[in-house]
Image (tube, rainbow, N blue to C red):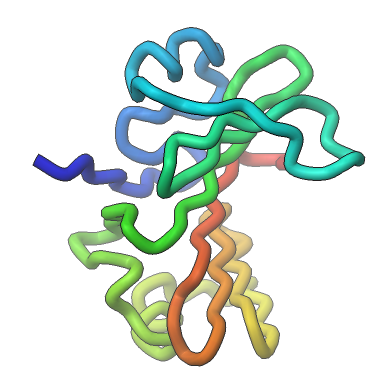
Length: 129
């Protein structure tokens, strides 16, 4: 059965809980590769195929970025199946920042990248990230 990642704002996504230790996450999720997202990254990132897990300098979970193929759910809705208008109404965030290619739902710690009217990335982070 496909893993479901249910967004719980500022707490975690599915079995990935913010501030969990890196070793614990790896044991829970299985096969991964480790890489540095950019030359400015303070720590490496784990690639689990259709999503990446970002860690603090203390090796605890800061954020998760999902890509198409991940089953990301919020309020019963499959996030990658939604369009821009459905996303906006689902989150109903008065602090939302909307740009041409992204929407940042500040009140929920969720940033969504949209290219050619399709969601290409869902970034979920802990409070204060």
